[in-house]
Image (cartoon, rainbow, N blue to C red; front, side):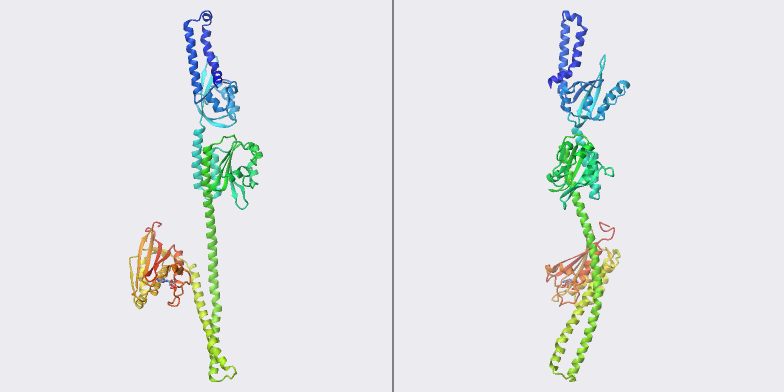
Length: 598
Ligand code: ADP
Protein backbone atom coordinates (compact mmCIF):
# COMPACT_ATOMS: atom_id res chain seq x y z
CA UNK A 1 0.00 0.00 0.00
CA UNK A 2 2.87 2.30 0.82
CA UNK A 3 4.47 1.97 -2.57
CA UNK A 4 1.11 2.43 -4.17
CA UNK A 5 0.64 5.69 -2.39
CA UNK A 6 4.09 6.80 -3.29
CA UNK A 7 3.37 5.99 -6.83
CA UNK A 8 -0.01 7.59 -6.50
CA UNK A 9 1.29 10.85 -5.21
CA UNK A 10 4.50 10.85 -7.21
CA UNK A 11 3.65 12.69 -10.46
CA UNK A 12 2.70 16.06 -8.94
CA UNK A 13 5.40 15.66 -6.31
CA UNK A 14 7.96 14.95 -8.95
CA UNK A 15 6.91 17.99 -10.85
CA UNK A 16 6.95 20.15 -7.74
CA UNK A 17 10.38 18.87 -6.81
CA UNK A 18 11.64 19.26 -10.37
CA UNK A 19 10.51 22.82 -10.77
CA UNK A 20 13.04 24.61 -8.57
CA UNK A 21 15.78 22.36 -9.78
CA UNK A 22 14.90 23.24 -13.37
CA UNK A 23 14.86 26.96 -12.53
CA UNK A 24 18.40 26.85 -11.10
CA UNK A 25 19.71 24.24 -13.52
CA UNK A 26 22.94 25.90 -14.66
CA UNK A 27 24.48 26.99 -11.35
CA UNK A 28 23.30 23.79 -9.62
CA UNK A 29 25.17 21.67 -12.12
CA UNK A 30 28.40 23.27 -11.14
CA UNK A 31 28.01 23.82 -7.40
CA UNK A 32 24.64 23.68 -5.62
CA UNK A 33 24.26 26.57 -3.25
CA UNK A 34 23.35 26.02 0.36
CA UNK A 35 20.09 27.84 -0.21
CA UNK A 36 19.10 25.49 -3.04
CA UNK A 37 19.86 22.43 -0.92
CA UNK A 38 17.78 23.83 1.91
CA UNK A 39 14.93 24.50 -0.47
CA UNK A 40 15.05 20.88 -1.76
CA UNK A 41 14.98 19.59 1.80
CA UNK A 42 12.00 21.80 2.56
CA UNK A 43 10.20 20.50 -0.50
CA UNK A 44 10.93 16.86 0.42
CA UNK A 45 9.71 17.55 3.90
CA UNK A 46 6.51 19.09 2.54
CA UNK A 47 5.99 16.16 0.21
CA UNK A 48 6.39 13.69 3.07
CA UNK A 49 3.88 15.58 5.12
CA UNK A 50 1.42 15.73 2.28
CA UNK A 51 1.85 12.02 1.69
CA UNK A 52 1.24 11.28 5.36
CA UNK A 53 -1.95 13.31 5.24
CA UNK A 54 -3.17 11.47 2.15
CA UNK A 55 -2.18 8.09 3.57
CA UNK A 56 -4.02 8.57 6.81
CA UNK A 57 -7.05 10.45 5.51
CA UNK A 58 -10.40 8.77 6.23
CA UNK A 59 -11.83 10.20 3.06
CA UNK A 60 -10.95 8.71 -0.28
CA UNK A 61 -8.92 11.13 -2.34
CA UNK A 62 -8.31 10.75 -6.08
CA UNK A 63 -6.73 12.94 -8.66
CA UNK A 64 -7.67 12.74 -12.32
CA UNK A 65 -6.58 14.69 -15.35
CA UNK A 66 -8.89 16.45 -17.74
CA UNK A 67 -9.45 13.24 -19.72
CA UNK A 68 -10.65 11.51 -16.57
CA UNK A 69 -7.50 9.39 -16.18
CA UNK A 70 -6.64 8.60 -12.56
CA UNK A 71 -3.26 9.99 -11.57
CA UNK A 72 -3.24 9.33 -7.87
CA UNK A 73 -5.39 7.60 -5.30
CA UNK A 74 -4.97 7.32 -1.53
CA UNK A 75 -5.32 4.14 0.58
CA UNK A 76 -8.76 5.10 1.92
CA UNK A 77 -10.11 5.29 -1.64
CA UNK A 78 -8.50 1.96 -2.53
CA UNK A 79 -10.13 0.32 0.49
CA UNK A 80 -13.45 1.90 -0.35
CA UNK A 81 -13.47 0.68 -3.96
CA UNK A 82 -11.66 -2.62 -3.46
CA UNK A 83 -8.85 -2.00 -5.95
CA UNK A 84 -5.07 -1.87 -5.71
CA UNK A 85 -3.34 1.31 -6.85
CA UNK A 86 -1.85 -0.58 -9.80
CA UNK A 87 -5.35 -1.45 -10.98
CA UNK A 88 -6.58 2.09 -10.84
CA UNK A 89 -3.81 4.47 -11.78
CA UNK A 90 -3.88 5.21 -15.45
CA UNK A 91 -7.50 4.05 -15.82
CA UNK A 92 -10.51 6.19 -16.48
CA UNK A 93 -12.24 7.21 -13.26
CA UNK A 94 -15.56 6.11 -14.77
CA UNK A 95 -14.77 2.51 -13.66
CA UNK A 96 -15.69 3.70 -10.19
CA UNK A 97 -19.20 4.65 -11.28
CA UNK A 98 -22.28 2.59 -12.11
CA UNK A 99 -24.28 3.16 -15.28
CA UNK A 100 -25.37 5.61 -16.60
CA UNK A 101 -22.68 7.89 -15.08
CA UNK A 102 -20.00 5.45 -16.24
CA UNK A 103 -20.83 5.98 -19.91
CA UNK A 104 -21.43 9.68 -19.56
CA UNK A 105 -18.52 10.76 -17.39
CA UNK A 106 -16.15 11.68 -20.23
CA UNK A 107 -18.84 13.94 -21.61
CA UNK A 108 -19.35 15.53 -18.17
CA UNK A 109 -15.67 16.56 -17.98
CA UNK A 110 -15.54 17.68 -21.59
CA UNK A 111 -18.64 19.74 -21.07
CA UNK A 112 -17.18 21.39 -18.00
CA UNK A 113 -13.86 22.13 -19.71
CA UNK A 114 -15.70 23.66 -22.65
CA UNK A 115 -18.43 25.65 -20.87
CA UNK A 116 -17.09 26.06 -17.33
CA UNK A 117 -20.50 25.01 -16.03
CA UNK A 118 -19.98 22.80 -13.02
CA UNK A 119 -22.38 20.13 -11.84
CA UNK A 120 -20.21 18.79 -9.05
CA UNK A 121 -16.92 20.65 -9.17
CA UNK A 122 -16.68 23.07 -6.31
CA UNK A 123 -20.21 22.12 -5.25
CA UNK A 124 -20.20 18.57 -3.93
CA UNK A 125 -23.15 16.24 -3.78
CA UNK A 126 -24.44 12.81 -2.90
CA UNK A 127 -24.16 10.22 -5.62
CA UNK A 128 -23.46 6.52 -6.06
CA UNK A 129 -20.20 4.72 -6.75
CA UNK A 130 -19.35 1.19 -7.79
CA UNK A 131 -16.83 -1.13 -6.19
CA UNK A 132 -14.57 -3.51 -8.04
CA UNK A 133 -16.95 -6.38 -7.20
CA UNK A 134 -19.78 -4.52 -8.94
CA UNK A 135 -21.62 -3.55 -5.76
CA UNK A 136 -22.95 -0.02 -5.63
CA UNK A 137 -22.79 2.28 -2.60
CA UNK A 138 -23.78 5.85 -1.82
CA UNK A 139 -21.04 8.47 -1.50
CA UNK A 140 -20.66 12.12 -0.77
CA UNK A 141 -18.41 13.56 -3.45
CA UNK A 142 -16.61 16.90 -3.47
CA UNK A 143 -14.42 17.81 -6.46
CA UNK A 144 -11.99 20.66 -6.64
CA UNK A 145 -10.10 21.82 -9.63
CA UNK A 146 -6.34 22.44 -9.63
CA UNK A 147 -5.05 24.60 -12.45
CA UNK A 148 -1.43 24.09 -13.29
CA UNK A 149 0.42 26.19 -15.82
CA UNK A 150 -0.02 23.76 -18.67
CA UNK A 151 -3.07 21.69 -17.68
CA UNK A 152 -5.67 21.11 -15.04
CA UNK A 153 -6.30 18.39 -12.56
CA UNK A 154 -9.35 17.47 -10.57
CA UNK A 155 -9.22 16.14 -7.04
CA UNK A 156 -12.15 14.19 -5.78
CA UNK A 157 -12.88 13.72 -2.08
CA UNK A 158 -15.08 10.70 -1.54
CA UNK A 159 -16.87 9.73 1.64
CA UNK A 160 -18.72 6.41 1.94
CA UNK A 161 -22.15 7.30 3.37
CA UNK A 162 -23.59 3.75 3.22
CA UNK A 163 -24.07 3.64 6.99
CA UNK A 164 -25.89 6.94 7.19
CA UNK A 165 -28.05 6.16 4.17
CA UNK A 166 -28.84 2.69 5.47
CA UNK A 167 -29.94 4.16 8.79
CA UNK A 168 -32.15 6.72 7.05
CA UNK A 169 -33.59 4.00 4.86
CA UNK A 170 -34.28 1.72 7.81
CA UNK A 171 -36.11 4.49 9.61
CA UNK A 172 -38.14 5.24 6.51
CA UNK A 173 -38.93 1.56 5.97
CA UNK A 174 -40.05 1.18 9.56
CA UNK A 175 -42.23 4.26 9.41
CA UNK A 176 -43.72 3.35 6.03
CA UNK A 177 -44.51 -0.26 6.95
CA UNK A 178 -46.02 0.68 10.30
CA UNK A 179 -48.24 3.17 8.50
CA UNK A 180 -48.99 0.64 5.76
CA UNK A 181 -50.24 -1.85 8.33
CA UNK A 182 -52.23 0.75 10.23
CA UNK A 183 -53.99 1.86 7.04
CA UNK A 184 -54.78 -1.60 5.69
CA UNK A 185 -58.20 -3.17 6.06
CA UNK A 186 -57.38 -6.58 4.63
CA UNK A 187 -54.42 -8.95 4.36
CA UNK A 188 -54.12 -8.31 0.61
CA UNK A 189 -54.10 -4.56 1.18
CA UNK A 190 -51.56 -4.84 4.01
CA UNK A 191 -49.32 -7.04 1.87
CA UNK A 192 -49.36 -4.71 -1.12
CA UNK A 193 -48.82 -1.67 1.17
CA UNK A 194 -45.82 -3.28 2.86
CA UNK A 195 -44.35 -4.45 -0.47
CA UNK A 196 -44.68 -0.91 -1.84
CA UNK A 197 -43.21 0.63 1.33
CA UNK A 198 -40.11 -1.62 1.31
CA UNK A 199 -39.59 -1.27 -2.47
CA UNK A 200 -39.88 2.49 -2.43
CA UNK A 201 -38.11 3.26 0.85
CA UNK A 202 -35.36 0.69 0.75
CA UNK A 203 -34.84 0.92 -2.99
CA UNK A 204 -35.80 -2.58 -4.23
CA UNK A 205 -37.24 -3.01 -7.69
CA UNK A 206 -39.58 -5.94 -7.19
CA UNK A 207 -41.42 -7.24 -4.14
CA UNK A 208 -43.31 -10.51 -3.73
CA UNK A 209 -45.68 -11.80 -1.05
CA UNK A 210 -45.84 -15.58 -0.68
CA UNK A 211 -48.44 -17.22 1.52
CA UNK A 212 -48.18 -20.59 3.21
CA UNK A 213 -51.01 -22.78 1.97
CA UNK A 214 -51.27 -25.04 5.02
CA UNK A 215 -53.49 -27.63 3.32
CA UNK A 216 -51.21 -28.04 0.31
CA UNK A 217 -48.05 -27.67 2.44
CA UNK A 218 -46.75 -25.17 -0.14
CA UNK A 219 -45.91 -21.52 -0.64
CA UNK A 220 -47.84 -19.59 -3.27
CA UNK A 221 -47.18 -16.18 -4.76
CA UNK A 222 -50.25 -14.02 -4.15
CA UNK A 223 -49.16 -10.37 -4.32
CA UNK A 224 -46.41 -8.43 -6.11
CA UNK A 225 -45.15 -4.87 -6.31
CA UNK A 226 -45.26 -3.10 -8.67
CA UNK A 227 -48.73 -4.58 -9.29
CA UNK A 228 -48.43 -7.09 -12.11
CA UNK A 229 -50.88 -6.65 -14.95
CA UNK A 230 -50.70 -8.24 -18.35
CA UNK A 231 -47.05 -7.24 -18.72
CA UNK A 232 -45.90 -8.94 -15.53
CA UNK A 233 -42.18 -9.55 -15.29
CA UNK A 234 -40.76 -12.91 -16.31
CA UNK A 235 -39.88 -13.55 -12.67
CA UNK A 236 -43.44 -12.92 -11.49
CA UNK A 237 -44.87 -15.02 -14.30
CA UNK A 238 -42.53 -17.85 -13.36
CA UNK A 239 -43.52 -17.44 -9.70
CA UNK A 240 -47.28 -17.45 -10.33
CA UNK A 241 -47.36 -21.08 -11.32
CA UNK A 242 -45.16 -22.30 -8.49
CA UNK A 243 -46.15 -24.17 -5.35
CA UNK A 244 -42.88 -24.21 -3.44
CA UNK A 245 -42.38 -26.92 -0.87
CA UNK A 246 -40.63 -26.17 2.41
CA UNK A 247 -36.92 -25.68 1.76
CA UNK A 248 -37.26 -25.22 -2.01
CA UNK A 249 -36.12 -21.98 -3.66
CA UNK A 250 -35.42 -18.78 -1.76
CA UNK A 251 -38.98 -18.39 -0.34
CA UNK A 252 -39.06 -22.08 0.61
CA UNK A 253 -35.71 -21.80 2.38
CA UNK A 254 -36.90 -18.83 4.40
CA UNK A 255 -40.08 -20.73 5.25
CA UNK A 256 -38.03 -23.70 6.47
CA UNK A 257 -35.42 -21.66 8.35
CA UNK A 258 -37.77 -18.93 9.63
CA UNK A 259 -34.85 -16.50 9.22
CA UNK A 260 -34.37 -13.47 6.98
CA UNK A 261 -31.97 -14.27 4.13
CA UNK A 262 -29.87 -12.08 1.87
CA UNK A 263 -28.54 -13.22 -1.48
CA UNK A 264 -25.98 -10.92 -3.11
CA UNK A 265 -26.69 -12.36 -6.56
CA UNK A 266 -29.54 -14.79 -7.21
CA UNK A 267 -28.32 -15.49 -10.72
CA UNK A 268 -25.31 -17.22 -9.18
CA UNK A 269 -27.30 -19.03 -6.53
CA UNK A 270 -27.79 -22.69 -7.57
CA UNK A 271 -30.75 -23.07 -5.19
CA UNK A 272 -32.71 -20.22 -6.73
CA UNK A 273 -35.48 -21.83 -8.79
CA UNK A 274 -36.16 -18.87 -11.08
CA UNK A 275 -32.54 -17.92 -11.81
CA UNK A 276 -33.20 -18.01 -15.53
CA UNK A 277 -36.01 -15.45 -15.23
CA UNK A 278 -33.87 -13.30 -12.91
CA UNK A 279 -31.12 -13.18 -15.54
CA UNK A 280 -33.71 -12.21 -18.12
CA UNK A 281 -34.95 -9.39 -15.86
CA UNK A 282 -31.46 -8.18 -14.95
CA UNK A 283 -32.17 -8.76 -11.26
CA UNK A 284 -29.38 -9.71 -8.89
CA UNK A 285 -29.63 -8.98 -5.19
CA UNK A 286 -32.48 -10.57 -3.26
CA UNK A 287 -33.72 -10.30 0.26
CA UNK A 288 -36.36 -12.51 1.85
CA UNK A 289 -37.87 -12.53 5.31
CA UNK A 290 -40.51 -14.67 7.01
CA UNK A 291 -43.87 -13.37 8.20
CA UNK A 292 -44.02 -14.98 11.57
CA UNK A 293 -46.49 -15.78 14.23
CA UNK A 294 -44.37 -16.81 17.19
CA UNK A 295 -42.38 -19.68 15.69
CA UNK A 296 -44.81 -20.38 12.88
CA UNK A 297 -44.18 -18.94 9.41
CA UNK A 298 -47.39 -17.81 7.71
CA UNK A 299 -45.81 -16.20 4.66
CA UNK A 300 -42.61 -14.90 3.10
CA UNK A 301 -41.75 -11.58 1.48
CA UNK A 302 -39.04 -11.46 -1.18
CA UNK A 303 -37.43 -8.36 -2.73
CA UNK A 304 -35.15 -8.06 -5.74
CA UNK A 305 -32.76 -5.34 -6.89
CA UNK A 306 -30.99 -4.84 -10.21
CA UNK A 307 -27.57 -4.41 -8.70
CA UNK A 308 -25.43 -6.67 -6.53
CA UNK A 309 -25.94 -5.72 -2.93
CA UNK A 310 -23.91 -6.76 0.04
CA UNK A 311 -25.98 -7.91 3.03
CA UNK A 312 -27.27 -5.19 5.34
CA UNK A 313 -27.58 -6.98 8.67
CA UNK A 314 -29.40 -4.12 10.32
CA UNK A 315 -32.04 -4.01 7.58
CA UNK A 316 -32.49 -7.76 7.89
CA UNK A 317 -33.03 -7.47 11.63
CA UNK A 318 -35.53 -4.69 11.06
CA UNK A 319 -37.40 -6.74 8.45
CA UNK A 320 -37.53 -9.72 10.79
CA UNK A 321 -39.34 -7.44 13.24
CA UNK A 322 -41.62 -6.15 10.49
CA UNK A 323 -42.25 -9.77 9.44
CA UNK A 324 -43.59 -10.52 12.88
CA UNK A 325 -45.81 -7.42 12.76
CA UNK A 326 -47.21 -8.51 9.40
CA UNK A 327 -47.67 -12.07 10.72
CA UNK A 328 -49.68 -10.77 13.66
CA UNK A 329 -51.71 -8.58 11.34
CA UNK A 330 -52.52 -11.59 9.16
CA UNK A 331 -53.56 -13.61 12.20
CA UNK A 332 -55.73 -10.75 13.49
CA UNK A 333 -57.44 -10.32 10.13
CA UNK A 334 -57.93 -14.07 9.70
CA UNK A 335 -59.44 -14.27 13.17
CA UNK A 336 -61.67 -11.29 12.42
CA UNK A 337 -62.93 -12.76 9.18
CA UNK A 338 -63.49 -16.16 10.85
CA UNK A 339 -65.42 -14.38 13.58
CA UNK A 340 -67.47 -12.49 11.01
CA UNK A 341 -68.25 -15.73 9.17
CA UNK A 342 -69.14 -17.39 12.43
CA UNK A 343 -71.40 -14.53 13.50
CA UNK A 344 -73.02 -14.59 10.07
CA UNK A 345 -73.66 -18.33 10.14
CA UNK A 346 -74.84 -18.07 13.74
CA UNK A 347 -77.30 -15.35 12.80
CA UNK A 348 -78.55 -17.49 9.90
CA UNK A 349 -78.87 -20.56 12.13
CA UNK A 350 -80.67 -18.50 14.73
CA UNK A 351 -83.04 -17.22 12.13
CA UNK A 352 -83.63 -20.76 10.87
CA UNK A 353 -84.19 -22.03 14.37
CA UNK A 354 -86.60 -19.25 15.17
CA UNK A 355 -88.62 -19.99 12.08
CA UNK A 356 -88.53 -23.67 12.89
CA UNK A 357 -89.71 -23.10 16.45
CA UNK A 358 -92.40 -20.77 15.26
CA UNK A 359 -93.68 -23.07 12.55
CA UNK A 360 -93.37 -26.17 14.72
CA UNK A 361 -95.16 -24.70 17.71
CA UNK A 362 -97.83 -23.22 15.51
CA UNK A 363 -98.45 -26.35 13.46
CA UNK A 364 -98.11 -28.78 16.34
CA UNK A 365 -100.92 -27.09 18.16
CA UNK A 366 -103.58 -28.06 15.60
CA UNK A 367 -103.18 -31.84 16.05
CA UNK A 368 -103.20 -31.11 19.75
CA UNK A 369 -106.62 -29.55 19.44
CA UNK A 370 -107.78 -32.79 17.80
CA UNK A 371 -106.24 -34.86 20.55
CA UNK A 372 -107.96 -32.69 23.10
CA UNK A 373 -111.32 -32.95 21.34
CA UNK A 374 -111.21 -36.69 20.69
CA UNK A 375 -110.02 -37.59 24.18
CA UNK A 376 -112.98 -35.61 25.48
CA UNK A 377 -115.31 -37.55 23.21
CA UNK A 378 -113.69 -40.77 24.33
CA UNK A 379 -114.20 -39.79 27.95
CA UNK A 380 -117.84 -39.09 27.26
CA UNK A 381 -118.27 -42.43 25.49
CA UNK A 382 -116.69 -44.20 28.42
CA UNK A 383 -119.00 -42.39 30.82
CA UNK A 384 -121.99 -43.55 28.80
CA UNK A 385 -120.76 -47.14 28.78
CA UNK A 386 -120.20 -46.91 32.48
CA UNK A 387 -123.71 -45.60 32.98
CA UNK A 388 -125.16 -48.57 31.04
CA UNK A 389 -123.07 -50.94 33.04
CA UNK A 390 -124.21 -49.34 36.27
CA UNK A 391 -127.85 -49.54 35.16
CA UNK A 392 -127.43 -53.23 34.40
CA UNK A 393 -128.36 -52.63 30.80
CA UNK A 394 -125.31 -54.37 29.49
CA UNK A 395 -125.24 -58.11 29.81
CA UNK A 396 -121.85 -59.68 29.26
CA UNK A 397 -119.75 -62.49 30.71
CA UNK A 398 -116.99 -59.88 31.02
CA UNK A 399 -119.07 -57.36 32.88
CA UNK A 400 -116.73 -57.20 35.84
CA UNK A 401 -113.72 -56.88 33.63
CA UNK A 402 -115.37 -54.19 31.53
CA UNK A 403 -116.21 -52.27 34.66
CA UNK A 404 -112.62 -52.40 35.84
CA UNK A 405 -111.32 -51.32 32.44
CA UNK A 406 -113.66 -48.35 32.25
CA UNK A 407 -113.23 -47.11 35.77
CA UNK A 408 -109.54 -47.70 36.14
CA UNK A 409 -107.44 -48.23 33.00
CA UNK A 410 -109.30 -46.17 30.42
CA UNK A 411 -109.97 -43.29 32.81
CA UNK A 412 -106.37 -43.26 33.95
CA UNK A 413 -105.12 -43.32 30.37
CA UNK A 414 -107.43 -40.52 29.43
CA UNK A 415 -106.28 -38.44 32.38
CA UNK A 416 -102.69 -38.90 31.29
CA UNK A 417 -103.50 -38.00 27.71
CA UNK A 418 -105.35 -34.89 28.81
CA UNK A 419 -102.58 -33.82 31.22
CA UNK A 420 -99.95 -34.39 28.56
CA UNK A 421 -101.95 -32.51 25.99
CA UNK A 422 -102.40 -29.63 28.41
CA UNK A 423 -98.68 -29.65 29.23
CA UNK A 424 -97.75 -29.79 25.56
CA UNK A 425 -100.13 -26.98 24.86
CA UNK A 426 -98.50 -24.71 27.43
CA UNK A 427 -95.05 -25.68 26.18
CA UNK A 428 -95.97 -24.91 22.61
CA UNK A 429 -97.63 -21.67 23.63
CA UNK A 430 -94.41 -20.81 25.49
CA UNK A 431 -92.30 -21.64 22.47
CA UNK A 432 -94.52 -19.49 20.34
CA UNK A 433 -94.24 -16.57 22.71
CA UNK A 434 -90.52 -16.98 22.98
CA UNK A 435 -89.97 -17.24 19.23
CA UNK A 436 -92.10 -14.16 18.65
CA UNK A 437 -89.77 -12.08 20.85
CA UNK A 438 -87.15 -11.88 18.14
CA UNK A 439 -89.71 -10.54 15.70
CA UNK A 440 -91.26 -7.77 17.80
CA UNK A 441 -90.27 -4.28 16.68
CA UNK A 442 -88.18 -2.35 19.18
CA UNK A 443 -88.65 1.26 20.14
CA UNK A 444 -85.54 2.36 21.97
CA UNK A 445 -85.89 5.65 23.84
CA UNK A 446 -84.84 7.31 27.11
CA UNK A 447 -87.01 5.86 29.87
CA UNK A 448 -88.07 7.24 33.24
CA UNK A 449 -87.62 4.05 35.25
CA UNK A 450 -88.96 5.65 38.49
CA UNK A 451 -92.34 6.18 36.84
CA UNK A 452 -92.30 2.73 35.26
CA UNK A 453 -91.50 1.00 38.56
CA UNK A 454 -94.18 2.95 40.45
CA UNK A 455 -96.75 1.84 37.90
CA UNK A 456 -95.67 -1.82 38.14
CA UNK A 457 -95.82 -1.61 41.95
CA UNK A 458 -99.44 -0.46 41.75
CA UNK A 459 -100.41 -3.52 39.70
CA UNK A 460 -98.74 -5.77 42.29
CA UNK A 461 -100.44 -4.30 45.34
CA UNK A 462 -102.89 -7.16 45.73
CA UNK A 463 -100.23 -9.84 45.35
CA UNK A 464 -98.00 -8.09 47.87
CA UNK A 465 -100.83 -7.87 50.32
CA UNK A 466 -101.65 -11.55 49.88
CA UNK A 467 -98.04 -12.48 50.49
CA UNK A 468 -97.75 -10.07 53.42
CA UNK A 469 -94.69 -8.61 51.75
CA UNK A 470 -93.26 -5.12 51.72
CA UNK A 471 -91.86 -3.50 48.58
CA UNK A 472 -89.57 -0.44 48.74
CA UNK A 473 -88.30 1.39 45.70
CA UNK A 474 -85.23 3.64 45.79
CA UNK A 475 -84.24 6.44 43.41
CA UNK A 476 -83.67 4.88 39.97
CA UNK A 477 -81.56 6.34 37.14
CA UNK A 478 -83.09 6.68 33.68
CA UNK A 479 -81.98 4.33 30.90
CA UNK A 480 -82.26 3.71 27.20
CA UNK A 481 -84.62 0.90 26.21
CA UNK A 482 -88.01 -0.27 24.96
CA UNK A 483 -90.72 0.70 27.47
CA UNK A 484 -93.05 -2.26 26.88
CA UNK A 485 -90.33 -4.87 26.98
CA UNK A 486 -88.58 -3.41 30.00
CA UNK A 487 -91.90 -3.26 31.81
CA UNK A 488 -92.26 -6.97 31.11
CA UNK A 489 -88.75 -7.67 32.47
CA UNK A 490 -89.25 -5.78 35.75
CA UNK A 491 -92.80 -7.13 36.22
CA UNK A 492 -91.42 -10.61 35.86
CA UNK A 493 -88.61 -10.05 38.34
CA UNK A 494 -91.03 -8.60 40.90
CA UNK A 495 -93.52 -11.44 40.27
CA UNK A 496 -90.77 -13.93 40.99
CA UNK A 497 -89.56 -11.99 44.03
CA UNK A 498 -93.05 -12.33 45.50
CA UNK A 499 -93.60 -15.89 44.27
CA UNK A 500 -90.37 -17.24 45.73
CA UNK A 501 -90.53 -15.57 49.16
CA UNK A 502 -89.91 -17.71 52.20
CA UNK A 503 -93.20 -18.20 54.06
CA UNK A 504 -91.27 -18.50 57.33
CA UNK A 505 -90.38 -14.78 57.45
CA UNK A 506 -92.01 -11.54 56.39
CA UNK A 507 -91.18 -10.79 52.77
CA UNK A 508 -88.97 -7.81 52.04
CA UNK A 509 -88.41 -6.74 48.46
CA UNK A 510 -86.29 -3.75 47.49
CA UNK A 511 -85.64 -2.18 44.10
CA UNK A 512 -82.60 0.13 43.89
CA UNK A 513 -80.54 1.66 41.10
CA UNK A 514 -77.18 3.28 40.37
CA UNK A 515 -74.97 4.40 37.52
CA UNK A 516 -71.95 2.11 37.18
CA UNK A 517 -69.29 2.20 34.46
CA UNK A 518 -71.45 4.38 32.26
CA UNK A 519 -74.53 2.15 32.51
CA UNK A 520 -77.76 2.18 34.50
CA UNK A 521 -77.79 -0.78 36.89
CA UNK A 522 -80.98 -1.86 38.70
CA UNK A 523 -81.18 -4.40 41.51
CA UNK A 524 -84.31 -6.33 42.54
CA UNK A 525 -83.54 -7.85 45.94
CA UNK A 526 -85.70 -10.27 47.96
CA UNK A 527 -85.27 -12.21 51.19
CA UNK A 528 -86.88 -15.32 49.73
CA UNK A 529 -85.83 -18.93 49.40
CA UNK A 530 -82.74 -18.17 47.31
CA UNK A 531 -81.20 -20.22 44.52
CA UNK A 532 -78.44 -22.84 44.89
CA UNK A 533 -75.22 -21.82 43.09
CA UNK A 534 -75.41 -24.75 40.66
CA UNK A 535 -78.81 -23.56 39.43
CA UNK A 536 -78.01 -19.87 39.14
CA UNK A 537 -76.89 -20.14 35.49
CA UNK A 538 -79.67 -22.50 34.46
CA UNK A 539 -82.65 -20.44 35.59
CA UNK A 540 -82.21 -18.28 32.48
CA UNK A 541 -82.74 -21.30 30.24
CA UNK A 542 -86.12 -21.79 28.69
CA UNK A 543 -88.50 -23.97 30.80
CA UNK A 544 -85.97 -24.44 33.57
CA UNK A 545 -87.81 -24.48 36.93
CA UNK A 546 -86.43 -25.43 40.31
CA UNK A 547 -89.67 -26.18 42.16
CA UNK A 548 -92.18 -27.15 39.50
CA UNK A 549 -94.61 -28.68 41.98
CA UNK A 550 -94.67 -25.93 44.57
CA UNK A 551 -95.31 -22.80 42.53
CA UNK A 552 -97.22 -22.16 39.33
CA UNK A 553 -95.24 -21.00 36.35
CA UNK A 554 -94.00 -21.87 32.90
CA UNK A 555 -90.25 -21.49 33.45
CA UNK A 556 -90.21 -18.88 30.73
CA UNK A 557 -90.05 -15.57 32.63
CA UNK A 558 -86.28 -15.28 33.06
CA UNK A 559 -85.50 -16.74 29.62
CA UNK A 560 -87.77 -14.12 28.10
CA UNK A 561 -86.29 -11.36 30.29
CA UNK A 562 -82.78 -12.26 29.16
CA UNK A 563 -83.82 -12.39 25.51
CA UNK A 564 -85.63 -9.05 25.71
CA UNK A 565 -82.66 -7.41 27.41
CA UNK A 566 -80.17 -8.78 24.89
CA UNK A 567 -82.06 -7.08 22.11
CA UNK A 568 -81.66 -3.68 23.77
CA UNK A 569 -78.01 -4.05 24.84
CA UNK A 570 -79.09 -5.00 28.31
CA UNK A 571 -77.75 -7.66 30.64
CA UNK A 572 -79.15 -9.66 33.51
CA UNK A 573 -77.44 -11.68 36.23
CA UNK A 574 -78.24 -13.07 39.64
CA UNK A 575 -76.55 -13.25 43.01
CA UNK A 576 -78.20 -15.48 45.54
CA UNK A 577 -77.69 -17.28 48.81
CA UNK A 578 -80.02 -20.25 49.39
CA UNK A 579 -82.19 -19.61 52.44
CA UNK A 580 -81.37 -15.90 52.50
CA UNK A 581 -82.61 -14.39 49.27
CA UNK A 582 -81.74 -13.37 45.74
CA UNK A 583 -80.80 -10.20 43.91
CA UNK A 584 -81.35 -9.86 40.16
CA UNK A 585 -79.23 -7.17 38.48
CA UNK A 586 -80.31 -5.58 35.22
CA UNK A 587 -77.99 -3.21 33.39
CA UNK A 588 -78.88 -1.01 30.42
CA UNK A 589 -77.28 1.82 28.45
CA UNK A 590 -77.75 5.34 29.79
CA UNK A 591 -79.63 7.90 27.70
CA UNK A 592 -77.39 10.16 25.53
CA UNK A 593 -75.70 12.86 27.53
CA UNK A 594 -75.62 10.77 30.68
CA UNK A 595 -73.59 7.79 29.52
CA UNK A 596 -69.98 7.68 28.37
CA UNK A 597 -71.10 6.32 25.02
CA UNK A 598 -73.95 8.80 24.75
P1 ADP B 1 -91.13 -19.46 36.52
O1 ADP B 1 -91.13 -18.46 37.60
O2 ADP B 1 -92.31 -19.43 35.64
O3 ADP B 1 -90.77 -20.83 36.99
P2 ADP B 1 -88.79 -18.06 35.60
O4 ADP B 1 -88.03 -18.23 34.34
O5 ADP B 1 -89.27 -16.73 35.95
O6 ADP B 1 -89.93 -19.10 35.50
O7 ADP B 1 -87.84 -18.61 36.73
C1 ADP B 1 -87.16 -19.81 36.58
C2 ADP B 1 -86.84 -20.43 37.91
O8 ADP B 1 -85.92 -19.64 38.62
C3 ADP B 1 -88.02 -20.50 38.82
O9 ADP B 1 -88.77 -21.67 38.58
C4 ADP B 1 -87.40 -20.50 40.19
O10 ADP B 1 -87.02 -21.80 40.54
C5 ADP B 1 -86.16 -19.68 40.03
N1 ADP B 1 -86.35 -18.28 40.48
C6 ADP B 1 -86.66 -17.20 39.74
N2 ADP B 1 -86.72 -16.09 40.50
C7 ADP B 1 -86.43 -16.45 41.76
C8 ADP B 1 -86.32 -15.75 43.01
N3 ADP B 1 -86.52 -14.45 43.11
N4 ADP B 1 -86.02 -16.48 44.10
C9 ADP B 1 -85.79 -17.82 44.02
N5 ADP B 1 -85.89 -18.53 42.88
C10 ADP B 1 -86.20 -17.86 41.76
